[in-house]
Length: 399
Image 1: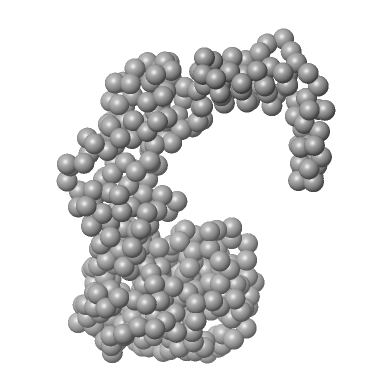
Image 2 (image 1 turned 90 degrees about the vertical axis):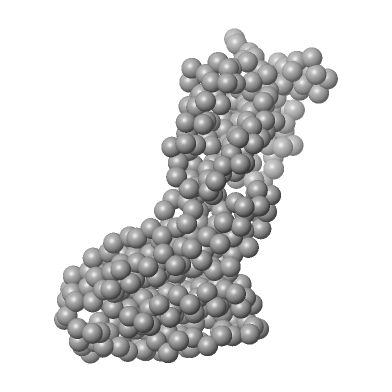
């Protein structure tokens, strides 16, 4: 069969509100709000530059079912660029942008092909004369918990057979509801050459030969969606399939480690943090402080009460661009207690009393709880050692 090349993307989530970031400086928040559109424009740039035969989008083009006119207009604007170069687009809608949403809908250009709410074929012949058949369906409503693979047509005949699917593979543990669930075995049974998946925002390849692929979303939207985001360029020729990941994100969410080893003063810590931040590109940064250092109690309090985060954000506020430190976390979050504080004093006394006495009887009601019993959890000296370590209190020896 003749060679074909296409882009596989999913989960654009255009017009995402980024509600949790409204406290950002106004200019940065505006840039973040526009990041999904900027990432999508980069995706179209790549399709044009690479002169692909077609583009596949596997659901959730929009973040909400009531998609805004602004988001639709910007989508159409980018699709018009593809039409000018004769590059068709094949789309399924997912749970976020299902067909049943109430909205004012703009007309799509004629080269944009949208699948109905039942699995169906759509066909094309590339400029080089390769025959391609694409199967898929769009969500008719927000919640599709039915197994849809039995309704997909079985691949027969000549030419490439590709399927679009917005759903969840059964063994994936993710923060996503199990929409249109499937198993790899089910997909393999259909005989397609490539499965273009969507819904899971983490990029992953579930199977090779044939490829079953989640490209992930094109723009991370919160701190759990770290790393480069983008799409795949897929090149197929006969039995050969090659994938190339193309990052298109406007801003990357990253975790950056900062070692506390050898740090004795707040100023030293601040300098290390600045070095870490300066080494990042346009990113939303979570700083992870690792190690213990030799700082005193006052320095630790500054870290724990948010002064470190406030200081670094104040220094960045007038800087240009998107880069921002949104969080400071700790390898081991220590709760420092003052032995002269009344609450702390009671805590210390309770620990001493438990360690010196028969803790098994003192905690008998807790230990009889079904959940504790089920997992065989026990309270022993090591537990008290860990508690004291967490609270920053002296470790009792010789018990």
